[in-house]
Image (tube, rainbow, N blue to C red; front, side, top):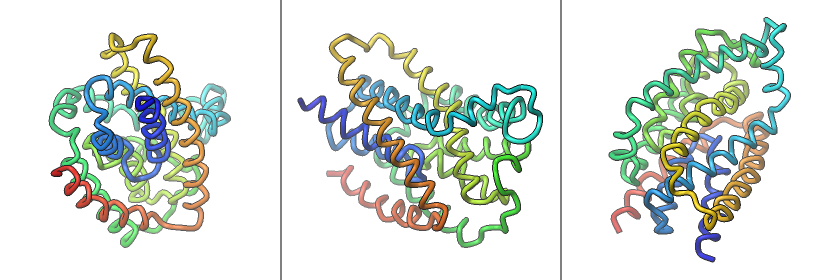
Length: 265
């Protein structure tokens, strides 16, 4: 029963935090430590429930993703152009992540480094919102290849646990004068290829840990993650239509020292 309860808790944490700028990886590391759910099996489970969150994005934005395969379209965020935009955003983090994967897992996946990432990311959110350049690019169709590759470089910062992939891509897009809601939606879409790649890479490396006894627990985490991610995505899109990211910045700054304290007890 404890394993099933852990699966539900971690599924909720993953789904709620994956696409908002607070770092799902950071929260999973901290909550996993509090639950004493650690080790290679826990790492594999956390990777698996990310699939649930990814599927929520695929479901909500299914029309856009289907549009990527309409190759006759050459304008806007569809067909070849849409695929190339996502590819350009994905490649930098994919290359750097593959090269530094072992070191990141070994040295950075702990509550102390997470708290640093959360704090720095929170300061970055407040700074960008305070000195935000005037938005000139409204809607996904306004994104350029240059925007995509630069957002990809910003995404590399999220390899530090606690920085948050969504925060890095959203803030990067906003600094490129992309309107906030558009930046958020592109962050959702750009999450799919890089998360799929990272997830299947981790699952491939740890497939030997899977067993029929664990399948039900993994399935519970997957379903809970999907549902909570769907709720989180809908809520965040509605919130960002009329509010800034400042509350998320303050949340990160306030929770960072708390994590440091808890990790030393």
